[in-house]
Amino acid sequence: MVHTMHAVGQSLILAAVLCLSGCSRMGIESSPAELFKLQAECASQARQFEADWRRDNGSDFVFLYFQNHYNKAQGRSFVHIYYGNSDLNMETVYDALEGVSKPPIILLIGGNDKAANESKEHLALAAKIRDYMEGGTNSK
Image (cartoon, rainbow, N blue to C red; front, side, top):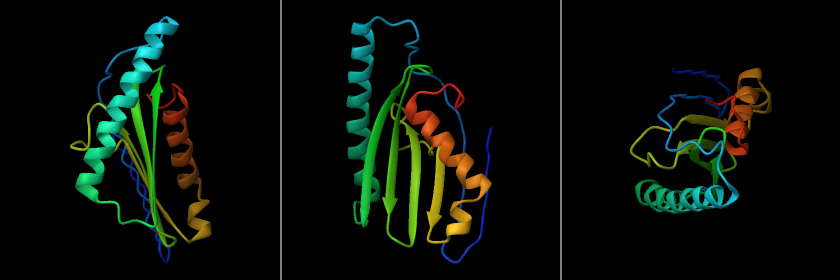
């Protein structure tokens, strides 16, 4: 399934690509010890992902933040990257296990056009990013 949306503003192009891939491992009924192990595996996958992403994309951005999360409901590890500058910023969510060779699950591009950043589509995509990173099941 692919969703795309483009909003044109002075410095804004807003796009999203949603393409779901297979689960790595379901953790819904995991013991605390197993969940801890899965979260540690997620952190390890995310560290490798970050190193690969920096190698491929560089780090010459005004800001560049990485966050990882083991989504227990989906049994998958996700990496959220927020990067850019004051005029153009991007947020992407990747499956950490798939690595940088696959396209992001979500790509959200924003800028300094407040109206476009507050559009219904932009806010919906931002909510979907939060859902992936906070463990919701709506992102399946």
